[in-house]
Image 1: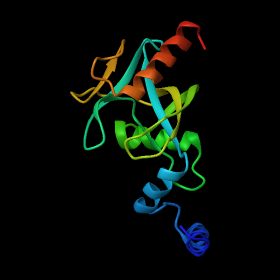
Image 2: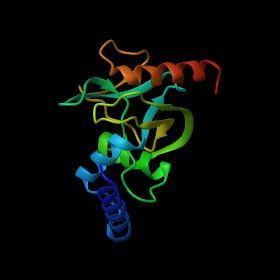
Image 3: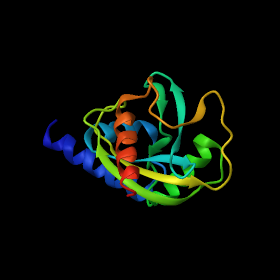
Length: 165
């Protein structure tokens, strides 16, 4: 890419930041994600004094297997707590979470979307009872068909809980 194109790209990114609503257009977000590590939150809802954790099953063009509910922070100025509550509402169907505890922060070497996101794993409690389904269940150990990167997150959680954080 020549200097003229780089200057135009820089100008357009600034223009987008100044004029865009809070949400970055998805095509732009995917392009940025390939270049810059973007933050994501992983929301590990627990019960029974932390001995069980909630996973959801995902089957799409990017993933196949059990995973921790989570997502990227795509809104400007969205706090980590607000992002966790958005995930709780959108992926789990509850009003939110509380008693958030930072478990770990891991930068993925590769991601299905391209790029290397920075995942921030929180353990927490649900604001209300979570209704289990075939695709959303509590586990007391790591299931066999777990999305590989999320296995590392659960192992970290188990290690910390055995040391009581």
